Structure formats: C-alpha cells, structure tokens
Amino acid sequence: MKKIYFTPGPSQVHPKLETFMKDVLSDDIMSISHRSQAYMEIAKNTHTGLRKLLFIPKSHHIFFMSSSLESMERIIANCVNTQSFHFINGSFAEAFFNASEAQGKTANVLRFLPGERIDMDSVGIPEKTELICITQNETSNGSCIPMKDIYALKKRYPKIPIALDIVSSVPYPSIDFKKIDIAFFSVQKGFGLPSGLGILIVNDVLVQKSKQMGYHDFPSLAQKELLFQTPETPNVLAIYLLGRVVENMLSQGIAPMRHSIESKARLIEEVVLAHPDLGSFFIKDKEVRSQTVLAIEVGNKVDVIIEKLRLKGFVVGRGYGIYKKTQIRIANFPQHSLNDFQSLRKELERIPTQLRK
Ligand SMILES: *Cc1c(COP(=O)(O)O)cnc(C)c1O
Image (cartoon, rainbow, N blue to C red; front, side, top):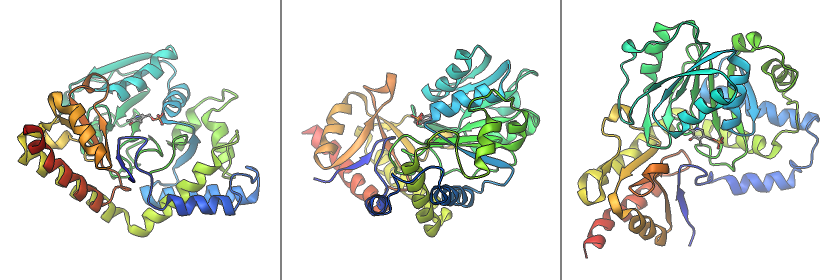
C-alpha cells in the first residue's frame, strides 16, 4: 500500500517529485560541474523563484546551507560577538540557544510555556544584545509565535536584528523582510524534498557587519552568491529540485496555498473537537497554535492510534521528546492535499469507536 506521510519532517514528498527526478537523470543534473553555466542557471532559477514566492527583497541574501542546524551555527558565528537573546519554549529553540552557548557566547533567554502567549510589551532585552533568536513555529510541541507579536517586539527594539527559524512553517507565514533580518528553513518539511539543504536568508546590513573569518563567513558567501555559486560543492540535486517545487508553488499561487493549509487544519480541528476520546490539541490558545504542525494529546492511546492509521497507509508522527508517549503530531504542509486530509480525517473519526470495542 502506498503510504502518505504526515510526519513533521522528513515528510510526504512533493507530488511532482517523480517527474522532477526523471528530469534530473535525463538532464545529467547530478554530473554537471558546479562551476558551469548550466549550474548557475539552476541556482539562479531557485534564487529567483524563492524571492518571488516568499517576497524576499534585494536587501536580503539567499545562502545555501546543508541543514538548519548549520544555519543556526553560521548565524551565531557571523552575527554575535558576545551576546544573543533567545525565546525558548521547545526543543528547536533550545538547539538555537545551544549553538550560541557552544560558541562561548552569552546566550540570554526568555523561557515560556508551550501554549503561552508572550506579552511583548513586558519583555526586557539587554541593551548589548546583538541578535534576537526566535523559533516561529516550534515543531516539538505544535506552538507558534504570531508574526504580529514578533513585529511588536521589533517595534520596541528596532535596532536589534531578529533571526527567525521558520523551518516547519514556511511557506505558510507571510514575512515582512523589512522587519526580519534573518530567516532560515530546510527543504524536508514544507517543500516535500529530501533532507540535506538549508536556506538561509540574511539582510545585507548584517553581511556587511559580519567580519571576514576566512571560511564560510557571510561576506565570502555573498561574494560567491553574486555568480549564483557557493564556496563548496553544493547540494546541486536539492537546489535543482527546490527550484522546480517553487515554480510549481508559484503556478498554484501562494495565497490559495496558505488558505488550503488553514482549511486542512480545520478538518483536523473538527474531528478532534467532535471526538473527546481522541483527546485535545496540546496548544489550547488558537493564536499560538501552529497550523502546520498539529500536536494532539491522546494519552496512552498513542501506539494504538499510530498503528491503526499506519495499517490504512497514514503515517503520523509521535510526540517529540517528553511528549513521545502522550501525543501524536500531524504535519500539514503544502504537499499534503485536501484529499489526503479528508481521508485522514475519516480514519481519525473511526478510531474512537474502534478503541471502545
Ligand atoms: C526540523 C527543524 C530544525 C532542524 O532542521 P535540520 O534540517 O534537521 O537542521 C530546526 N528548527 C525547526 C523548527 C525544525 O522543525
């Protein structure tokens, strides 16, 4: 049986991936030189597409990394001399914090609970902070920070750059790059591609301020980017595939895609509300509940539910870390069709009665 992966990453692949992969092989994408004109055209297509899709202005660079954890490390190395500040309510925000601490920086934190909405007016950020690090969508517990709250913070601290982890929400949130200096993501979540490519978007102001370290610093990445190149041999395959996926998304339109994500989330909300046996959303306040990673409390029924769904071809994720035994997570990415969600919903509806028997 063909499975559908609702796991939060790696996840279901893009429906056109097979076609794109055939083109990869017939056009020798994996053999061409990364210094050739053919490669530069591929990279340019991916750059141009991403700019259009996510409204990335000329003021911001696009760098190719191998993962988002690498992006975190590069961001700290390039933008923080002594002090960073981290909003933490889950494991991925913790990873960003660790990237700073591991490099010997003073990493200040504001810890809050999953599901808690931060009152940005009451947040105090130390004066010497060089970078505010925020996980916009916390994959580990299905919470998010509304963009309007992040802009409210920016308004209070206009001079401190913000780095935004949008790994598991992109391309859902609409981001105003006038207010966001850095954003990054990986392609194995909302782009339905194999892992191993991270996209790092950086304001030129920060690139100019970043010192030359001689290796993989922002200025040298920017130098190569002028020619749509990278210092190392990049993940040509993934860069090519991302360009194709982005073209496909552009042809559908970003607005309908975002709308569809909301409709699909609603289908799951309806079934969770209607069937108390299934549990409830871990994040109660809808303002801070993720639309793209749905974490549902199911108590001790995790294994039974996951297994029942798997038998029908639906692979959903377990809770993350401490939530492994009490939650399931359902990814709601652009590659998941409304039809996929309607089928999943039907199976979810069946679960409670089956369990009672
Ligand atoms: C998956 C994920 C990451 C890590 O991405 P990698 O590509 O594995 O480095 C970081 N942040 C968030 C929010 C994620 O969901």
